[in-house]
Length: 207
Image (cartoon, helix red, strand yellow):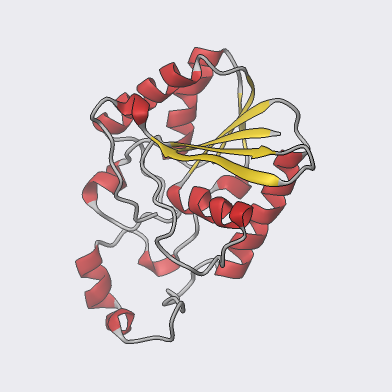
């Protein structure tokens, strides 16, 4: 298996600095440019299939890759961003105002849970299942997803505690590659590769 994970281009929500979750923002002007450069970069790769989160910011990014590679886009709900519930659509200042308990001390590694959010155990299980499906696919798969999804998959591949935060930064339209060795073991071959973005890289990730 060879899997290239692409985080979507900068979205309107990213540019506004809000926590997105499942809110369906499209790409910003910079995000459209990032997606075009990413499609150009991937033209040199022997793509067999292209899979995307159904959320607009990922689907619009995948459309650029699909046009360049002459491949259809397959949509997979398992690649959608973590559903943050009532935290979606809020800036950091708005989050602190609406959820003052967000700032209260918590045991090491414990996350604040927003009302209505998906739940980390469910999120991690759906990505574990998706990764197992990808392992059964021959050739190169490109999957367009989200920062939280790519980061969690990296945690799964290298065996880190999924509740640890800030280990894997994932820039917009960065490339992260997962392969299997001869024994079938998953390996992280590269992470957060943004060499193709020509000074247009953006790292902010609020979902």
